[in-house]
Image (tube, rainbow, N blue to C red):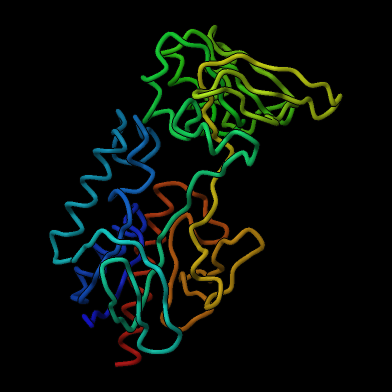
Length: 305
């Protein structure tokens, strides 16, 4: 079993920053990522709120640069899924590419898109139902589509989709948006965006592809159908913390609880980024978490060596 001082789970901004700091500190480090290095940020067509890029930068470019910088200092990376962690020192991490051992673990596994949980969603996922407007928006050119949600992601998706489609119906369960004021102003001023307030999706309908959505007004109970060629779900995220529930303290939603130094309830295990409780879920804060977690792991290893 290969042995490391630090194993990092997750290759998004938090994980890559952790890897950069850990490897620069001289720690023998391994980063395990099950998908794309860079995490969910790679799906963003333009990141406008990260300091140092006044004209913005594409998410894919940012993720690629972070990856390049992290491995420059000796960080080892593999593409694999973590399937389990044993309790007690040293920790043994099982993955789809073998098992590894480490005295410290930093969990930066992020989160995944929350689903609607309605009939027809699983069957039509990828056939008219999408969770990534940046990835799939161009496939719906010249069609009428819907976006479900009222936060920053939903409104950003709607504005991006408006470049490809004829109309975007924004379906929100409340009567006002949660998105930032700048995004709201852009959305309300856009002629292709139409708002359906106080409404939820109850079913996705269609034979082989999505044809329409069954809607319900949460205040009146009135039901209606909306014919669309696609729907983009942007109702939040769920933490990828399922395999940690038996060794770490999680909150009611499943986010990992940490202190201000990113330490979890288990000695030598730290968490950073979207997966931890009270994260702002921004690239800037994920990077700060990653740096803090790496320094905390370094100090922890000094104490047990």
